[in-house]
Image 1 (cartoon, rainbow, N blue to C red):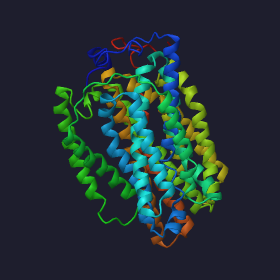
Image 2: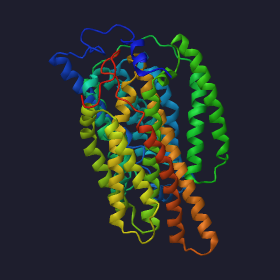
Image 3: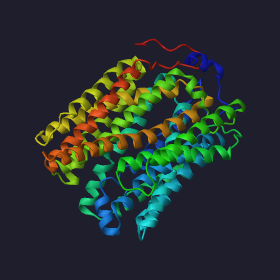
Image 4: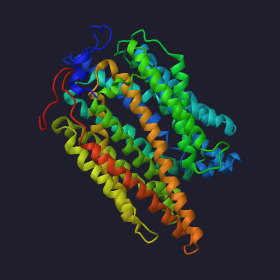
Length: 507
């Protein structure tokens, strides 16, 4: 691999000319009006992204209500989450093209319009079919929003203070999914499932209206070509992998065995990589894989994937443990996990400021060790483990994840040249979806196998068998987390400006 510094010097300026009222990457001396505009744009994107990402996990505790009210099976109901993740995995790779070809404002309006329309369809759906359509339309808007937010921040925010803003992005990416089950649990305790969409709809429409009026164009589009074959192959690659992992993770009797989409996805992924490597010679790639020429981007992406596996795996297994072993109601389960999500949100901006001052290593190393330690501790839970102790473990895990996410986003994406920002953002978003599905699959599969084995032995009751399965799931997660600790040592502070060497620690 090439060094980050060598890559940074390869293309010190964005493609295309920059209007006089825009901010040029690499030259962040801006007047007061431009600074105010940038804050407005980033603020709108942060609020909008939080609303759309929240819906990724909001359905997780609604399944019993939906199966009862809509008269569907659990297998069918799982598609409301699987379909959302699948759509995200298919659409996100295309956003690299969208963010190069179109300006900030029309992309934002498109994303929020799709999300609002999907929310409206879901809120008024007469049956399962239309509700699934609504979720897919929602996911299409969600998939566009996160890469748009990251690319815009990278374009507007100077490297010296980028960690602070990335800390706010970490709130969106990590806290929104974490508190989704809590919010849906509270809503379902008082209202029917439709209110999960009815209450979100006015917020989404308000963000769309305000954004339509106030959003400014802050990027410079270029006439980027769209390789249709790459789009088709990427849909089979990322869609096949996420669907296969989700099928394993949900443990339902699918019409197609899980290994079939995984094999199709794997073969398509090889074809996709070969196609992109050929196209990037002409700067025509759908996803430019030269991003991986940066060692820091590569290690940040791998470590981020491991962290997302831990986050989503824990989000799926801990509620099962609390409800099936300790007998808690969904509402109290959600409330028990809320402090961890709030702690993560409160710490993220602080972590961003610490990153700007000290760099990634002093945050990533203790963060990954903390996450691993908690996962190892959770391998000891049983039916007699005090619930407050479980809550403390979740809060501690959230602290560790808060120390991880901001340094990884900032270092990884900041190590790229401006020309590759949109591609890097799309790759990070795709990795999140694949890792989220993998975390669910790995944890649930380990839990199911261990639970079944314990029950078949005849020496354990139902509750004890589930507790055995939960311990097995966290054991797998704990082993995986050790690789994140290793990766933490290889993530470096990106160059302060393109072409400069990375700043030393403590400066």
